[in-house]
Image (cartoon, rainbow, N blue to C red; front, side, top):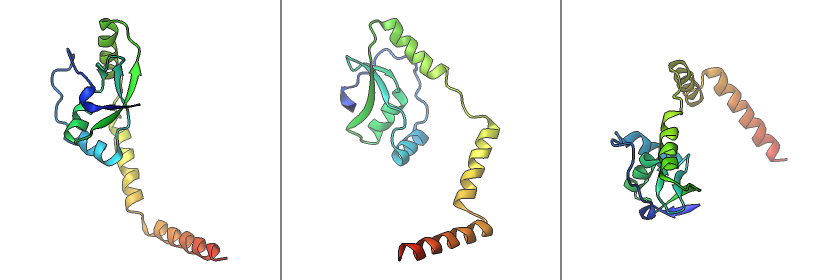
Length: 129
């Protein structure tokens, strides 16, 4: 569901420091919002304050939200804590593997470049028939 950014109310948040949003903004600008912002029926922000601030700074007028049905303030706070507490960052070796795979895809070695050209030639050849 899309919601106007200026309708979302962020009040009494646990997080006090949003930190540097530059990289998150670059990611959202490049790939879009990968995870929706979470609000309740009253449009109170439950989770995603950094994402919300990032899209505001990017000039977005609307944003994808997920609406949850929460009937008390304790549950709202618990959801905010859970979203930030239970995520697990990639390990150093996982990050290294990911960046290595990106590098190989962006800069293939000679063998892979030759294979790609052969595949491309066959595709062009068979499309003409």
